[in-house]
Structures are given as structure tokens and as C-alpha cells.
Amino acid sequence: MAAVDMDQLLAQVTREIEPQIGTGTVADYIPALGAVDPNQFGIAVALPDGTCHGSGQWTEPFSLQSISKIFTLALALAQNDEDIWWRVGREPSGTAFNSLVQLEYENGIPRNPFINAGALVVTDQLAGVVGDATEAVLDFLRAESGNPDIRCDEVVAASEEDHGDRILALTHFLASYGNIHGDVRDIVRQYVRHCSIAINCRDLALSGLFLARHGLLRDGSRMLAHNHTKRINAVMLTCGTYDAAGEFAYRVGIPGKSGVGGGILAIVPGRCSIAVWGPGLDRRGNSVSGVAALDRFTALTDWSVF
Ligand code: GLU
Image (cartoon, rainbow, N blue to C red; front, side):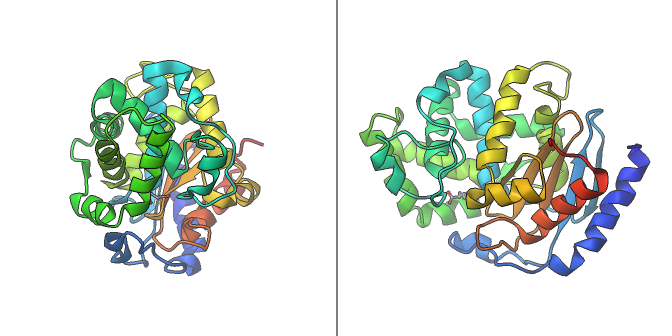
């Protein structure tokens, strides 16, 4: 598809999903997120040549939340190759993203890196190599997007930490199985801070482009082997959209990872990286307008992994 068509296509997608904008419920279990205006929507598509196209509020920052789990996983794989898979699985969980139940039955090995327990273990693994996982994620996002101003929103981070009993409980529970090696409070702090990064659709689409480029970074250097990005994309497809990964695969047909800030990063391997954002969530926790836009995008382009 010629680049000039992409702008028109995204404008069309935005027009078509307009009735969905503002629907759904904004996450408010992190109080600072509850204050976000639901009547917003943005979409950006980054192409393998490094160009980026967008529509709607695609330069408006939002809270990255669970989408940060893609970047911690990718950085952990880049640092330690396959070691992480001794500490975390890659099966859909069928339980809530912040559930404690399964962990006890499965001896402290989280089902996958995209539920909170799994992401805490990945954060711990990464922190063990680089010191501060949040700073590593920030450095990566800044380099890949070309935007040096990407920051953690400390108000959101403080708000989540103030209401962070469950995250703390999960981390202590993992530590009791020997699956957290660092200091529990420090790992929780790092986890909450990388979730609280403020980013816009443009910068997120560009930062995810390495997954569409089979592991190649913006400067052409290789971060990960194709085999690794294949695996990250596979886990995104099967575990990336909470307890609705089947429905998402059925409707959209590409790997995606959503966050409670209303963002979704989705990948068409070899073709593009797509970031969408609409703060209103469905009952499974995925952005209503975001899923609708990805559904229209893959339908109109005929781009899919199937
Ligand atoms: N920081 C959020 C939490 O741990 C991330 C949740 C999400 O986006 O799924 O609750």
C-alpha cells in the first residue's frame, strides 16, 4: 500500500469507528487513570521504512500500562536469551490479569509474561541485569521513537503505588517461591513506574516497529533474532488482550497487547506496527474504540497473520 493511501485509510477508520469513541468504562482502580476524558481516540501506523502515519489524537500522551510488558520481555530476551522461560510460562491464564490463585497451584511460576505476576518476574530478571528496568524501557522507547522527552508520569505511578496492595502481595508471594531475586519493594516500584510511562500513539507505533521488522531496530542494528520476535508476537496473540485473546484473534487476526490506559500495540509482521488509544474499556479490559479500529484496519487492508 502506498504511503499516501495510509493517511486516507486511517482517516476512514477513525470516521467509521466514531460511534464507539467515548463508550466503555475508564479504568479507575488506579485513581489517576479514572480522571482521563473517555472522549478521545488516536491511531498511528509505523511502516518498515520508519515513516509513521496517524489520525485523531495520535500525538496525545496516555498511560502505557500493561503494554510496557512487551518491552520488558523484549529487553529481557535481548539480555538473557531464553533464560526467562525457566521462570515464566507462555500459556493463556484464563484468570484475571492480577490474579493470585493460579500461582499457588503452579508453584510460583506465572502462566505468561503479560499477566501481572509474569511481568513482575520479567521486571526482576531485567533489573538483575540492567539495574533499573524502567530506565531501560525509557531508553529503548526514546531511542526507537526518536523522542527524548518520553517520561514516567509520576502522578500515575504514585497513585498506583498508593493502591498497590495486590501487586505487593503478588510480588511477596512470588518471592516466597524464590521467583523474585531482587528487593520486593524495589521491583514493585520499577514495575509500577514502567507501567506509568506516558506515551502517544506515534511514539508507541515507532517503538513497536522492531516486532514487525523481525528484530531490527530503527538504526538497522539487530536487537533480537527473528525467532525471538516470532515468540513475542505469538505470546501477544495468545495472551496479550486479557481474557479476550480468542475474540481479539477472531476479530482482528494479528498479535496485540492492550493496557488499562486504553492503548493497544498491534503488529502485522513484515508490514507495520499499529498503536491505537481510546480510554473507554470493555468488560474484559480492552479499549472499545481501539479494538474496533484494529478490526476495521485489518478488514480494509486485508493484512493479518492468517
Ligand atoms: N499497572 C497496571 C496494574 O498492574 C497494569 C494493568 C494493565 O494495564 O493490564 O494493575
